[in-house]
Amino acid sequence: MECPDPQPILELLEAPCPTIGQPRPEVGLRAGAGRVDIARVDGASAIVACVASSPLQLLAPSPRGRCAWIISASHGGGLLAGDEVSLEVDVGAGAVALLSTQAGTKIYRSRGEVASQGLSARVGAGALLAALPHPVSCFSGARFRQEQRFELARGASLLWLDALVAGRIARGERWAFDEYRSRIEVAIDGRTVLADALRLVPGEGPPIVARLPGVELLATVVALGPAVASAARELLERVAASPAERDAGVLAAASPLRDGLLLRVASRSVEAGLAFLRQRLAFVEAVTGADPFARTP
Image (cartoon, rainbow, N blue to C red; front, side, top):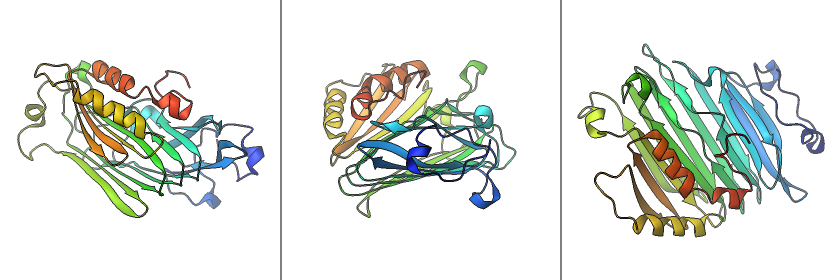
């Protein structure tokens, strides 16, 4: 299906953003690129622009309301070697946006080319962006790189989750990919306040399996800004009050940030790790009005 031309705001809000296939030439998007703009319109958060190019797909189960909810997906539920997917998101002042995925992102085997994914987001004053995708799963032989940058105005808020599964565990794959690199940067009022990276490449140091014995899921959460500051303080206190046990099924460590926190999670099972994240991030529904962890939007 082709993406429609830009429409007046009220007309656009009558229907969700469609599943989008190849762009029309005048759209000018390269393959795998997309853009979503969310603004505060008549007291509600609304999607005012939504366009994407295959293999990236964008769905909008809630284009207008307390929060605007956008779901990103890809044909086949994953990325092939050489795929380059990038999404630009602009959340206007006072708006609330929830960005999630339809399912976990599979990264298929590569013969050398890298699959890449990028997210660039701007969040206006008093706005909130919750970016809570399902985990990435890199298959045996996969090569994947991810870059994400968030530019927050003063008074803006961000809730971000990034999770990585060890692979197709049921088939005996554990950390069998050829390359995984992920980097996030967060800037507030033009000043970088957080830069964090994870690099897992076989041959660089001990085997990944040896470095992560028994671990099936890794996750990082960033919560910043006034909209999530109270929940971040509570979460920080809960993690601090739970002493780490060597044989625990889920290990968590939290570091305080100004008006927020950085949370790292390692789990011995995917199910236990996801359950832990859902429990610790249950406040999302209170601050956005939507539950991104529900099976159906």
